[in-house]
Length: 583
Image (cartoon, rainbow, N blue to C red; front, side, top):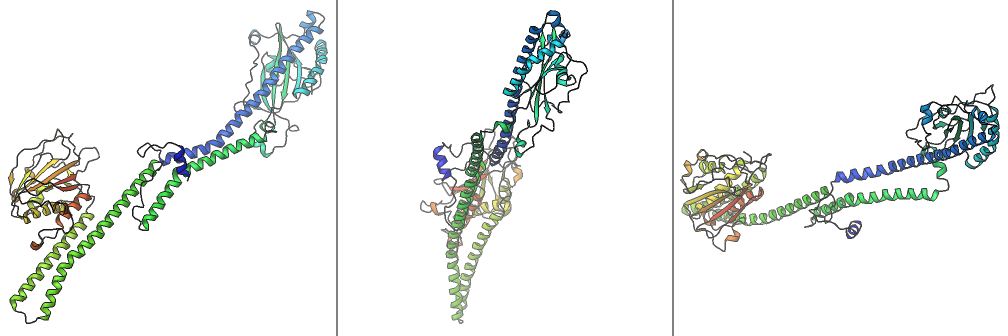
């Protein structure tokens, strides 16, 4: 499919590599889709301005040639220098020193759009005779230029009167036009003017793409020589528009449209590749998991974006956790039903015997009643342990000071067992917290102390240490013997080291009992496993401790060859937002 094909074509970095965010992908695609028509529109505008400057450049070339031709014609027709000089108008030093601007500069985006050219004004005075004859000589040249280039041309003398034209009467004045005023001052002038109403074309839907429709370029070039100004040449022409430029270029225009549409299709495929297909793969996995298929949710091999990768990992972790929880509940239910079956069967047999033998001797009745009481007591302890497991699930999200360890020993433990508490001062000084409630911490300590007492120990050593030692953590060496009735957190004196921030704390319980046999060590954390069933053991104590610790990301393990039963408990610590462990 598309994803597999693209990954075979393109080298893909591993899962830990950088991935763009989903918002970045959507933003980029939207920007690109928006940029396509905008870029096309801007390119059309630039192209249209280029066409306008081409028209202006052509008019400049014609104007310079016609100006040179007029100057040469008048000089040739003049009788003498005096006759020629009467056509020359002196210009001031500043204007004469400024060369005509011969570089095209008109731009549709910045040029001022002027109204249609005002009509010529009739004059009562005829132009000079020499200028009139020169205009008559040039008239055929102007007509030929009009046929070839399509540009209207007017030649005026130094007073602004027309002496040769392709469209106007001889003798009329154009002196009032802005471009002629500039030219008669010695400056080349180019302006954009609207076409007269009678010349304007009816707009079509294609006119929307062209701003130069119904516009004319007007260019006035002064006729200069070394002595002054002889007149000016006015040219005006409709520029080539986008509409006329695209005439005969339908194939190229169609190709541009195909390129734009292909780009949009590719962007859509890219969006599908980066978003739709990975999300659809996740939906398929979750539906398979919903039908009860084990192992259906797995990390996507090619999630592309960071959010999809994180979502895939989160769904996989959640599915694995649910599968483990389901397996645990199934196994626990089977073990629980087996564990409850024995006392219930014993109770049922005792009750049936007492019902069938109403004349049973009192001593015998008391024996059966004692057995019933033991079975009820065992069921009560099993139900109590199960309730502790349930409460552990409900208490998630709380935190407790590790110094509550002393409170648990002081207030709740009544076993006839001596306890040695060995701890670094910083660990129980009130600065470190574990992510569990005080009741859960008490349940852990209670079950471990009861386990030691039930297996014949009369001394229990509890030591605390940082799971990640820091050079700023200081410990008070050597055990100090305490009776549980005299333990109190106030005896733990802090040494402040704000930089010390271990992420875990380890608590080791070591008793002086017989320990655990090698054969039983792999099974001691299994629910309902006990070697002390005749004395009331339920086999749920160590299982409860293991569940409570694993529920907060901790762990418990048995350490062999320590001279007794030795359990190592690892508690994660709760960090505060500043990176220093929470008080």
